[in-house]
Length: 264
Image 1 (cartoon, rainbow, N blue to C red):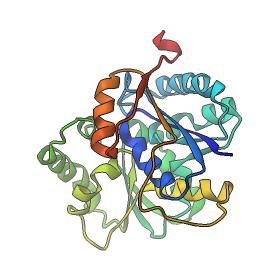
Image 2: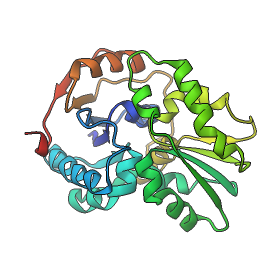
Image 3: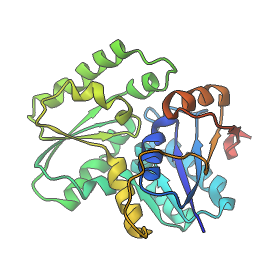
Image 4: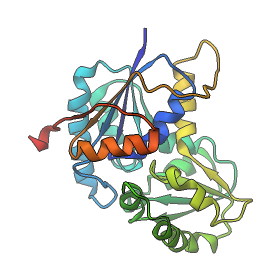
């Protein structure tokens, strides 16, 4: 019997969570929902994001999920309670998961504007560990650039210089990639900071919590990922998303176009 798992993001950022999950287990059936019509979420208001979260719950209601993996940090920061209260299933989120694995005292966080404004990262980290210094940096252009079919590495490199500059002044010891899209450009970010600074991808912390809740018969890491039991759904631009699936996951899959409530 396979676990039915929902993964939600505004776009391709959830691929980082999807891959982290499929590297550890094959006993899952996955419904991947990307709200491409309203991507990016990072520039939306707190109330807009909470409204979208309610629509996500309605869409997932008839999927009989065993769990939801919240692959969008912005939704996590602004509407975790909406998802948990409406779906009534285990909801695994990036921010609270990563808060359990920070080890150093001076933490940098790269995130969307909405996530930074919410202060959810700061609050979650300080609950888990005392005497932390946390410095957040808004990265308003990253998601739109990462979502392009052809990455402009020069542009991303320049944006990385701009966003990382302020954090370098604080001598950070760990850097949290506080948007699921950002690990997709981790190589660029890695080259911009001191090698002693640990980069944290919250997806690994989320999947660790998921696997603790739904124990594996045996711990295993699969060298080859199978996407056979993954279904992809988008709210717009399904042909463009299909190209992104080919580019990032190296597969051809049917991409189904769906409506959330306000899109009717």
